[in-house]
Length: 134
Image (cartoon, rainbow, N blue to C red; front, side, top):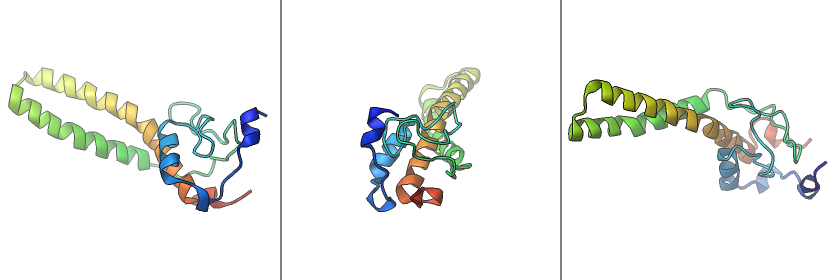
């Protein structure tokens, strides 16, 4: 076991700070210790933290990160598309290419971070299995 894991204790849901858990989740780190990786691939969540042994297998992020990604990307890119079109009048193919690449790139950037933040939120609130002390 790591030396860091010896210093980390599992916190009860009443002691968990929301902002810390969201930030650690956004960074794709364990919401409990902030050191272990939350994800083992692009969107696959580790069953347990390799540092503090916090269990993640019971998270319920489901489609929430995808909906949030669509919401954020749509609300950012739609006004930008309108502003660029009205101000600069680029060629349609140029406009489409730039915004298609922008939407895909922003979606790929946000999706794993929003998934981590959603799992951090669930952990901080003690939702699902995160509230049980095992």
